[in-house]
Length: 99
Image (cartoon, rainbow, N blue to C red; front, side, top):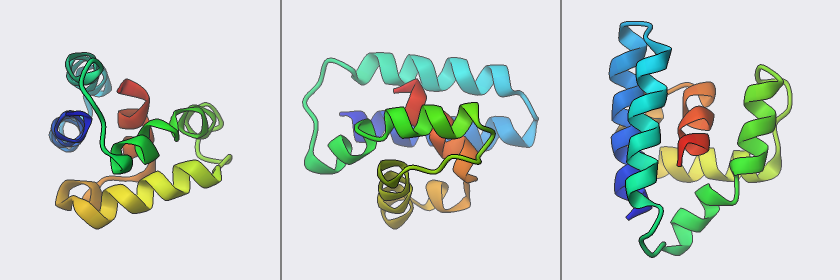
């Protein structure tokens, strides 16, 4: 499901961030998102997917635009995942975009 793909993407983000390899983050998260796109989603996954537009605005504005759906998705992810708790808002927004 998308939740496991996001968890994989977040793990890839945290590992790649340590080496400052943003291109590796994008490719890992992108491939994880692509493999999960055809599967069914839970209501929680929908919260994350609905935040894509807000995540795009957040990334494009370098963190200055923070939409309500992105805030809900960040809160959802951090409540349920230890890796997400340690990730920055920007890393999580990029992972959401990669789904």
